[in-house]
Amino acid sequence: MSDENNSDEITPEVISKDVSETNNLSKESKYNDNIETTEDLSKLLDLEKQKSSQFEEKLKHVLADFQNLSKKTQSDIEHGVNSKIDEFMLDFIKIYDDFIRAKEVISESKINADGLNSILKNMELLMQKYHIIPIEALGEIFNPTFHEAISIISDPTLDDNTITKEIRKGYISHERIIRPTLVEISKKDDDKK
Image (tube, rainbow, N blue to C red; front, side):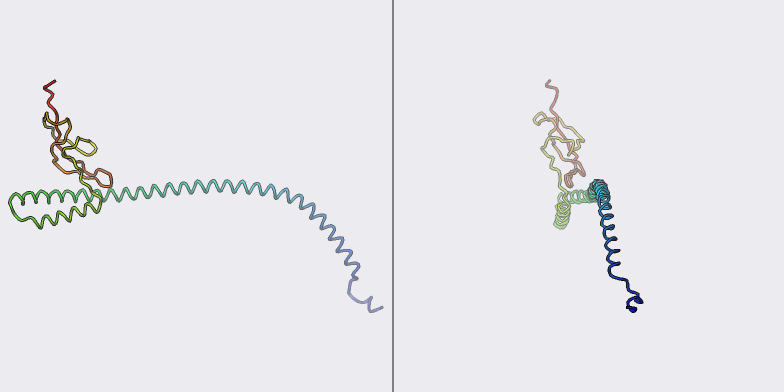
């Protein structure tokens, strides 16, 4: 028995009493904490839901702003590129006009213009490639969107504002007028009134 008294061991009964009391206290404390924690967590959850909803709205607005900016940037780029192409094509059309005038002079002189015809054909293909379309005007009614009248002739046989002569060809690029057609238009005589 003396060996038992000298040992450093703690008897199991004492340990189990202390642990069971601690467990009981811990369970009561946890139960009370759970009540408070559940209410707190519910409030925190509601607060987080509110924050989440606010962030979601902000994200939607930012996304909409980004999409609008993206569309505007794309539109600005396209407009800038189209403006430069139109500017270049206007210069090109002036050269094309010079070639047409040269062909007319050569044809009047009865000189072979096959080489010039070939060049003109290539120029016309280039204009088609870049969607440059000539404006048809002869015999049409004057439209200030497509035509620019620079002279008026009196002709009782034609309706007012009929285009009688095309002085300079006009062109459209991607449904935009890059150069209006210069025309001569008719007017009926007003002497009969």
